[in-house]
Amino acid sequence: QKEVEQNSGPLSVPEGAIASLNCTYSDRVSQSFFWYRQYSGKSPELIMSIYSNGDKEDGRFTAQLNKASQYVSLLIRDSQPSDSATYLCAVEYSNYQLIWGAGTKLIIKP
Amino acid sequence: ETGVTQTPRHLVMGMTNKKSLKCEQHLGHNAMYWYKQSAKKPLELMFVYNFKEQTENNSVPSRFSPECPNSSHLFLHLHTLQPEDSALYLCASSQEGDGELFFGEGSRLTVL
Image (tube, rainbow over all chains, first blue to last red; front, side, top):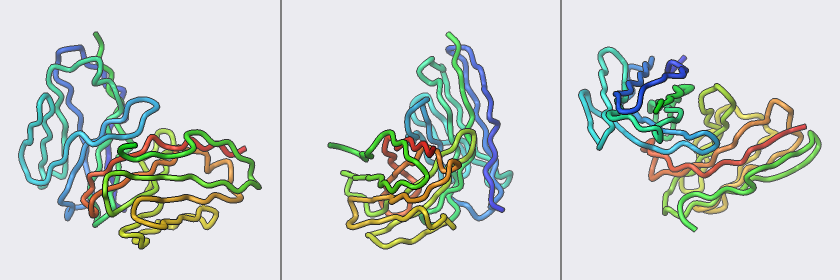
């Protein structure tokens, strides 16, 4: 069974600190990995995609991928209260098919 | 209108009713999806259409019936649902199957 695991949280981080969100996956052949953000009562929105081992930076967000260890993480620097949301990790299983984690709820405390 | 729009946003129906959810995308994408989101559970892919052709049907009960008349519109026809079908139903679109999905705001369904 192909799975994506995330700690459900909530993860509480002080404003201005670094928030670190982690995700592990079971399918070794997966090549594409995504982080989506979902605000309460809203739909998911894509914030980062990563396809190669290493780090990918976009503004305050950094995605990290380690295929050998089968984990992908998302770092949020200088966390803001507006970053409070549920973060969903998704891993491509095949064309058109993503396997989703249940999400980590992040709370940024002012 | 821009992005992906879904109607209705909220729907309450009895177990014997027939209703439909509608989705429209204005992004020029060629793939459209129906997902089910239940509390504390991962998103569940229900159906995928690529250029109007259904490419995935993840063992969804027949009381859910999708329809894709063209690459911009997607419907989910509902009949004789069960209370456990109560959930948020999300429509999404993408260019090819690249995993970069654009979601609509969802239709919150309650089955009494």
